[in-house]
Length: 330
Ligand code: PMV
Image (cartoon, rainbow, N blue to C red; front, side):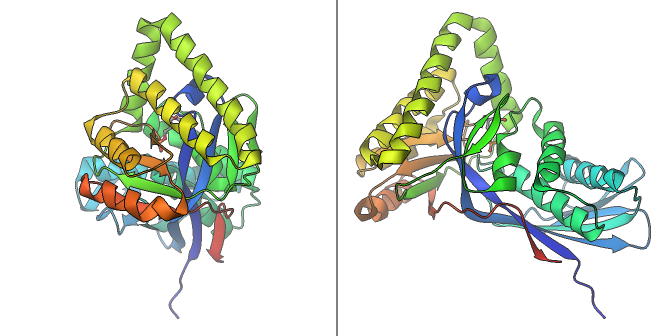
């Protein structure tokens, strides 16, 4: 009999407001979107943790602390797999197990693009391993493990990505107070544009830290402005005022530009979508490439997508999903 293993999935996300400033304790607004990462986990007869990623074209295994690559670049594969292995080990620790595992990742989320693909993968792998080993884990446990693990990949992070991948929906997230589900009345039609430029969250977060250290007073003013944008946006979500929401996105992008995390590839797509009639557009996630997001009225969506395509990006419509981490096959 062929065993299928346990399959879990978790959504990617779009940060609508507050990225980067969230690392310094400010609130942020984030939506889970209808692109998911899937992890299939099964037991092995030996103690190896074997990983493979169909999308990245990597395969290899950890045995004790050694990594052996089977497919792809060894350094890159190890870097991507290390966090997943760590998450699986943390799950094993919670239930007193020490077994070998096959972990297979399949994801429809663009990688290193600001949509939280690594968090979605880690959350899915954590939940699938927990379910396979019958660990008694709540969603909060999955979030905690994914959060601790993500730091290995990205350095100082706020935890916003693992939070939204675990819980789904729309969240107001702040580091010290945690997350609160946010009621979004407006029918938000988001167009995401992928520049195709891969970047590292860690590098962008460090760049912002440099800004904060070199210009503390200026940084503080930008930080205050970012907070005001989020507070205003919370009210706007209740009254379905898309025009104001778009303007707030534009102002938020200007703050991120001031921090130095936009780049030419993002600016092309953002300007193109504004010209095509988007109500607002901004980079999303860490910046330095990756994705931008535009808000458009339904009748303008096609035009905005077309403009992004002509400006060299890969556009797609992102719909909010309420489905957080989920066991697809027990
Ligand atoms: O680009 P992403 O999906 O890794 O998002 C990073 C979001 C930051 O605010 C820049 C960092 C963080 O940990 O919150």
